[in-house]
Image (cartoon, rainbow, N blue to C red; front, side, top):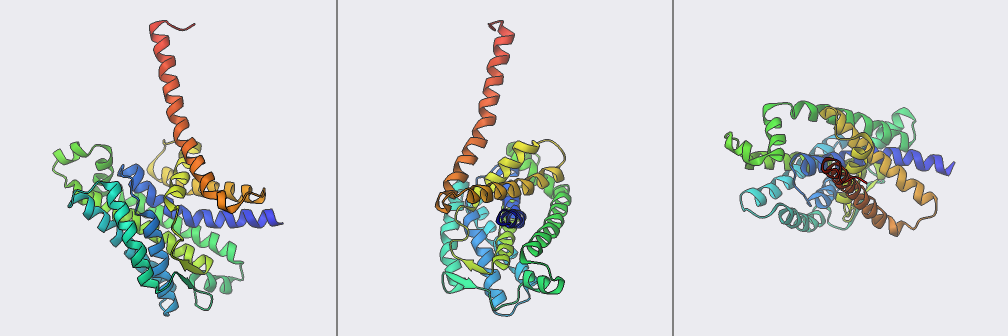
Length: 304
């Protein structure tokens, strides 16, 4: 019974965190930028959402405000990178560090509980009679489908295609007259907006926001991306690749649930995640090198 409950929780949390993984995918894969704002903007989404809900703001409006806050964080990172010419990885670190203090200012303390406040999950659970886990899963699926549809449409537009092209070949895009500074900033804003939305949904789901809730989010996002790409590959249309990231997030949460059921110490989860990401990123490279060596031997007739 406990295993079944753990799997249900893994499914619901996997979908909610999957939106964060989509945000990481936009910056890491599409823009080809290692954006370390993630840990800060995830917590920002939770902080803004929690404060809004506690002060009587509609839960859906609170999600929207949290999303906007994430977009602002992405804009700051993009501005530092493109206009101030600070390396992207350092710009993300600077924004992340600044967001820690900002998040404390927003909440006024390190933790904000929502136990006595109305949340989207609590309201729907009371209306339908469903458990909190099933409510989180249903809401997560609905939001994910809507987000994937919007992203699929947006990145098929002229400006969306320009953002994708910027990550593929920035020099060529610039030669065509596209302002790559704008496309980078837009991509970072969209990515961090999704990350903050995920943080806000997780906050309403678990019933509190914590200043440290975003620690390790970037690694979890990368793990979800890598797992999705390893299982489903990088082929298929854009909507399929976006969906595979969310599925990768769910699989990651299931793996975590399984190892916890096996008795693994929760303090070792970050280490496990880091090892999984390192292995998943290394294996394709090693396989590619092995194939290249085999092809070279075949072409040169040096096969034994």
